[in-house]
Length: 141
Image 1 (tube, helix red, strand yellow):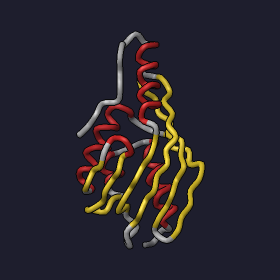
Image 2 (cartoon, one colour; image 1 turned 45 degrees about the vertical axis):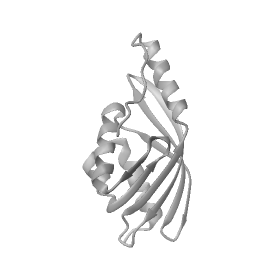
Image 3 (tube, helix red, strand yellow; image 1 turned 120 degrees about the horizontal axis):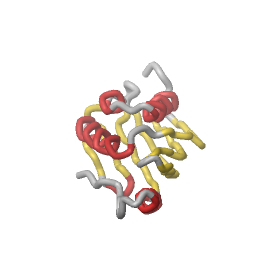
Image 4 (spheres, helix red, strand yellow; image 1 turned 90 degrees about the vertical axis):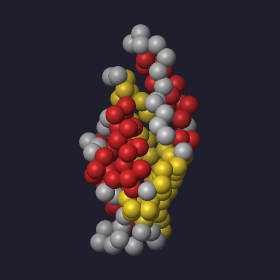
């Protein structure tokens, strides 16, 4: 591994500001697993890339403000605030994440915990303010 696990995770999180599914997907080991908090588990780099592309269609870029990053061996824990805009309205979520990297510096496992209800409430409020009606994050399988 040429870069430290912490620097790999920082580059991954920075890539979200102008996200490209292929670039984000390249951070993952072929057998990677993403435990997306309350939204389920994705197994394999291709399934993760497909889900990321679907989410990016709804959200677009995300500015990630890393509050805390702790690294031990190939495990990295992050406390972050993810900020995005949906229909011109800001959406903010506090996320706790654990990344486990393989020996080549690729993400083997990514586990996230966050308050999905808070995010969907912010989206619904922004839709109501625009007169769009009820809106929630699209659910992907």
